[in-house]
Image (cartoon, rainbow, N blue to C red):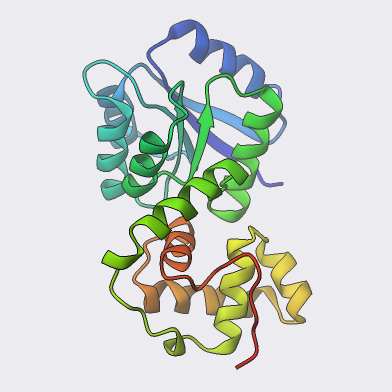
Length: 224
């Protein structure tokens, strides 16, 4: 896997340095920024000539918390992927952070293996939601489904719906290409069309859109 430039924003020095020590042992992960609060990470990003690919963002920090920092970074640096990091692994926090642009969610008591896996998955696919987070997203989507505007599913081609389904199953571009017997470049083209058609800002938003509008369900039938 290609090298991943990683930033860590957490006000707990021991935790921040501890996770940095662990992740620095990974041959494909480079810690490029360590910040102690939201204002610090934003300032360092603004001054950086080589931005990180991924940020591990603690939600509870002084001066400017992770939620507010995520809003700013998502707007100013939309290509940076943000992983929410918190002790509050609860439905309201998860939904709120996803709405603010977080592409993954990690509990602070996660194992180093889980942290490394999540970072790699986010770098590879653009997002990563484990089964618990996906269930919360689905429950929230069903709860709010009545307030959602109807989306014309026929606006998407059969191939686009196939690819969207596989994206929601968290398949990589290469895996989708192999399963559908098409090139990775073709997959990327369809993915870009899906982003434009649904108005989604990133792959994570595309998945949320698919769930909210019931384009993606666990057992889908692709017959016209």
